[in-house]
Length: 224
Image 1 (cartoon, rainbow, N blue to C red):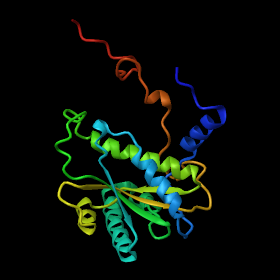
Image 2 (image 1 turned 135 degrees about the horizontal axis):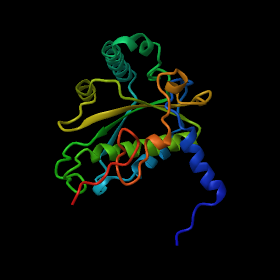
Image 3 (image 1 turned 90 degrees about the vertical axis):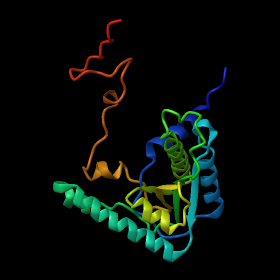
Image 4 (image 1 turned 45 degrees about the horizontal axis):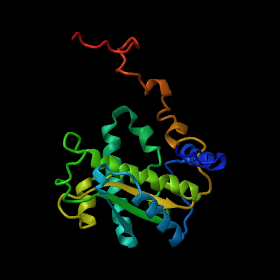
């Protein structure tokens, strides 16, 4: 039978999970190249459906390109605010990205020519996106263990970012990742601290055997 991690190792894994935060506030300064390499390697060791490894990561090192990407995010931030109606002003008070100050800016995308990969995707083609999300989560947890903050920015026009990075047809950007040094990690998720939303109770998200009905009972099976 496989052996579990020892107590200290297990505690470290759970600590990274519970203390990981979507960071928006960074302290300017470079990320050590060896540390960045470890984060990228952690992402590359994520699980993927059919072992297709659909993640592609573009490291942004040109200042002008970083500025263009930030401008793209700002345009979509304003469009998102307009779409939120009565919550517009509350949204405009939120800090949604730290692209100017983070030490590293990475764009994570789905690869092109994904169609031939049908293992695990015939009825759930979006599993390629789920696989990319696993890679991002690997990097997020590794960054927390390294004492680095990471923020996932998803407020952008897909076609605009695709064009800026010269992505081929079929490739799709799904995340702009800000990685860098932080003074401290938020004690709670920032959106919870700002009272934008709160964490749901675990019992509201985990069911047994069947989806519950409105009164909380499990849905009865259909007659045979």
